[in-house]
Length: 128
Ligand code: FES
Image (cartoon, rainbow, N blue to C red; front, side, top):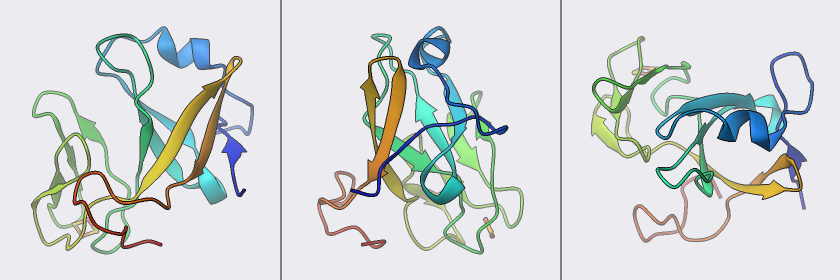
């Protein structure tokens, strides 16, 4: 089904408990589908958000940090900004950030392609 287990930068599987030990609001960067850096979100209730956000700006593909003070993803290349769920707040990025599906499986994190309706737009995802 094209899914993988989340790994760290060294290619080691990441225990879900390691990420869930972080405070609510944490955006943890992991290696996701095709090795794409992907942000996982620890929710207020201490569970993982079922959407992962791919760290690949829809403008020209830069990677970007999470800015916890402004509650945005902010691309350093040309200044695009995205809200916590990856919707564009400021261009030049033309499209919301790509989503992947995230599920905890025993103590690992399974990441799979997001092919259903984009819950942010109510439309078919642009990446499918
Ligand atoms: S690549 Fe992110 S704003 Fe241009």
